[in-house]
Amino acid sequence: MPFTKISLIKGKNKSFLQVFKEEILSSLINILKLPSDDRNIFLMEYEEESFEMKDPYEYLIEIAMFFGRSDETKKLLFKTIVDSLNAKLNIKKESIFIFINEQPLNNWGVRGGKSAEEVDLGFKVNIKQNK
Image (cartoon, rainbow, N blue to C red; front, side, top):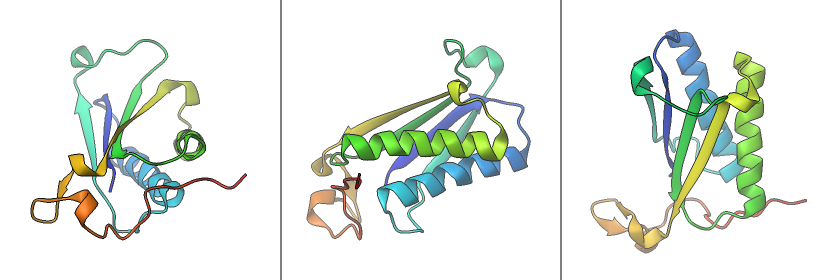
């Protein structure tokens, strides 16, 4: 159940934005082995004067998720997102900045105010990639 926020400058058409969002969701679901209906994603468009990032970055992807995925899994997630956006939308890989904010399960209040460590999430958090 990661929460993902995409930030970019206004001006892209709706089709571009939909593909952008869907490619990130698909990457999250496939790499983190999430249920297909696990969708918590927000796309935020900013006026050019309100969005400043160091060159060459044009797209910011923030992923807040439970602590526990291996470094290999996170590296694969980064690569999968960037490769997918490049292949589908011809976005330069170097223009994408991704960061993960990991939190322990007890920092998430879910399903009526329960700690996430107290409920069956329906997926594993401790994911390790096979080499």
